[in-house]
Amino acid sequence: MATVTFDKATRIYPGGTKPAVDALDIEIQDGEFLVLVGPSGCGKSTSLRMLAGLEDVNGGAIRIGDRDVTHLPPKDRDIAMVFQNYALYPHMTVAANMGFALKIAGVSKDVIRQKVEEAARILDLTEYLDRKPKALSGGQRQRVAMGRAIVREPQVFLMDEPLSNLDAKLRVSTRTQIASLQRRLGITTVYVTHDQVEAMTMGDRVAVLKDGLLQQIDTPRNMYDRPANLFVAGFIGSPAMNLVEVPITDGGVKFGNTVVPVSREALTAASSRGDSTVTVGVRPEHFDVVPVGAGGLSKESGLEVSVNVVEELGADGYVYGTARVGGEDKDLVVRVNGRQVPEKGSKLSIVPKAGETHVFSTSTGERLSD
Ligand SMILES: Nc1ncnc2c1ncn2[C@@H]1O[C@H](COP(=O)(O)OP(=O)(O)OP(=O)(O)O)[C@@H](O)[C@H]1O
Ligand SMILES: [Mg+2]
Image (cartoon, rainbow, N blue to C red; front, top):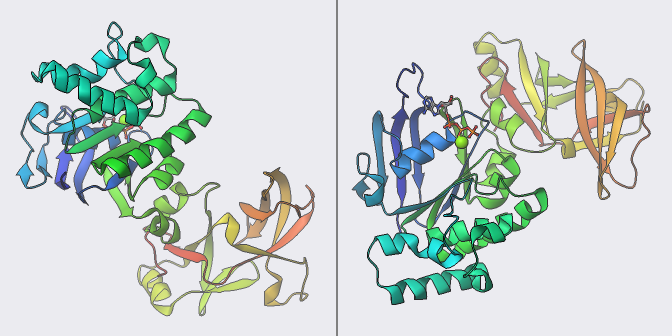
């Protein structure tokens, strides 16, 4: 068991000018399940491979527990990695695949057999131990890859998109299995995915990367409730948060006919940068639908949305519509009650729920509201 520390860890690939991972600072607690998430090319695999020792570190340090492992070879780091393609040996049985690392390490046959059987029991693989990988389903192969990592009883598990070869349904059930298995074993785990839903459902904490730079590290709840900048706001959550650039007015910002109150400090911060607008974020589930034209032209009448498409999901409906904001047509998504969905082509009037708006600097993207 161990903590893992990225201490301003930097990777610049040969011939590259910009770091693929730029001064990454993360402290992972003992037993924590940390998810690294971000779009393709943001540096997730590079970060994981630096921790594994498969990639040079060009600046900063990496520590596992108290040990500085920055320049240690992979075999001396006490980690086990599960890759996307599982990399099972096709000519070996499941049992041999799972025990291979122990065999290489010179562990006795009896001990290997015992550890493999125990891992197989945990992973529900007992009846497949004598099969070859090709005679297994994708989900079963994935579990063998996990088993191979488990039998080594490492200090740290590293997983790079281990579920991406599975179909959607199996991915959902397997992610629950992995998360609960990790909690049971209590082994510090760093898990890479580009899927924000996977990140939010599995991680104790989630670290969002973009262009090699850490954007935010937080619990899924905080990440959702208080995204640190526009990028995280748009990346976490599905359908995505509505982000609308609006003019700053006295005491708040104007969202359609509604003035959204914003703290004076936030507005001052924006103005002091010379910004005349801020970007307001509202999640699809954080609108109240009010009767169209309620209160005539008063401030309470909200923002009028023309309904383009309605997605009915049973419990909920998502309205994809267009609204006139700041002289421009803006696409918005609004969650509505699944039993009261509006007609396509109709109009809807919406008001952001009190306390559920996010305000960001339009120029820097950073969060201004608390
Ligand atoms: N061996 C390499 N040599 C040079 N550049 C590389 C190498 N490997 C990765 N890169 C670059 O480093 C950046 C980060 O790559 P990385 O593989 O870490 O991204 P990722 O977040 O894992 O993306 P994906 O979701 O597509 O797997 C990318 O711009 C990539 O092109
Ligand atoms: Mg990758």
